[in-house]
Length: 298
Image (cartoon, rainbow, N blue to C red):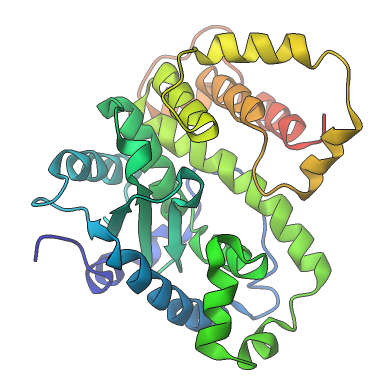
């Protein structure tokens, strides 16, 4: 076999990963308190199995005999983050659809070949690292659940075909309040995933280019510093449109860039990468405070 199977991943993904890594931003979920996790994971495994089969029709498993350069970067990122290597499907899909899907114990990656095209090994490490970061931080179950709730990438439509009326029975306990909480949680999880990507590539420029490519759809001809300066000049006046961020499942790109810059300047980043912190390195408390500010509406 020249690729990792879900069975391989499930066997090597142990309960040792149940504790969130230090770099993951704390964001409690109501799933365990409501006793919903086991039932939801059974449903999600069924739904994503069907979706994975559809995606594989137009994709390929990344492995030593297919896209071996990308597979090598995937292995390197998995070692850095200390996670089992999951199955990874590469396809000509939109960059916004790539993600980690399934559940925390049975995860797989869906990777856009457009994102991989024309990028450096360091940029690929950021992108793959942030997807693996969702596995390391045990965010896959909640991320996939959110996708089903809002029909992200057609997951709810697949769920309806697979489960019929039973879907609504399973989802009934999830009130509007839980959905809003998941939306806030999802934005936090994206910043955590970005941190994982930076830990894998350890290059802020490569991370910034990857984020901009995901936003612009092409390899950007602008640095992330120039992008932030241009944005600052064009947004001096606050707009009522900023409140739409409350309904967004991903922080604005400029906030993600600033969050990465902030993380890279922190004592935590130095500690996790084996470097000496600079005299002005942000403490863990300062990092948490600034990250919380970025998650707000502004």
